[in-house]
Image (tube, rainbow, N blue to C red):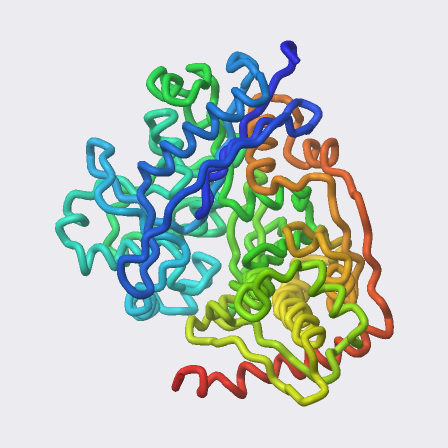
Length: 498
């Protein structure tokens, strides 16, 4: 082991800071996670303390080095990833001015409307690739400007969560282009800040850091950071990518035609595009990829495997997931007319509606617990199909393969339902550490371990299983999805009144 070279992937997620060591063959040597706390001081608010990210990151790095027995001198480069869209404001001395406002914070509805008024919705989508939504960074900056003017007056730097860790590691301000696009202050086509949008919103351009492609070096580990983390001073820190772009690298979704489907707490359908394509109504997110010179479409549903978790914890606490899935297996496709809307946290794609709500629809005396469970699995699959169809019809190119990852695809039943609902082959891969793994690969590419990102993925990401659609189920689910698509429009007004 002493002669091995490692690449360190750091993932600053909402729940914790992960440190992952990967060798030059793509094997994971070790992983360590230190949890974060979450503050919700007011309704709709979601915040974290950036200092906690740094202490958790330092602890995770020290722990993974200690537990693997790797020497710090074997770490050749660091790659960064993390939760997207969060707002970190620093003053001129690099001091944090207020708690970070996170991606799932919902306080900025008025500011989103303001952005649409100032720039124009269609023009904003055309430039940034996205509608102004509460999760994004730009409306958060406006909220601070309008509600905390003293903080805004002191601000000199805008960073995203993982870029605060970059600042603590290197002492410099920088951002990757994938995460930069997620601020919705980017001109998607030129892969950099939009002078027009930034100026229109009254944000000083000098607050925004320079941006880099995913594998590019953005600085080196300082002596102070080396003392805190146990890393060697002087090693490069690559730009990395937002968690979804890095996750796509981690499963090899870095070429057109390969779709990444992530079935975690939330659900994501991700497609690489060779140009800056935009869905005209903004129903899909369009961002830069962590792969140099590439872009991507992304559809997001907020409660995917989270819907099953809520169902289990709320209605059948203590029951094993496997037992629930076994009960659902003999239930016919379509759950004998029962439908589930998975909008437990509102929704993003294709309905950017924080007031959307969850529901079972079609309950009868015939339906039992197995039906309820299967309807949840099918409802989530229908929601993911909404994004899949938008991507398929967006001009992103022919879909050759869907690569599924996340805790939800561990069960064969859910994989089969997904394959039949999407009417496509579903494959799983050998890499299971997601975004942190992708960040480590980007760091390795940056120091020449692999020629480029696609080469790295072809070498280390391997297919481990396939699930084919069942033709009879697919016919049932085609009709079921049509019915599902009519439910939200029919209930939207009721949801708003609730």
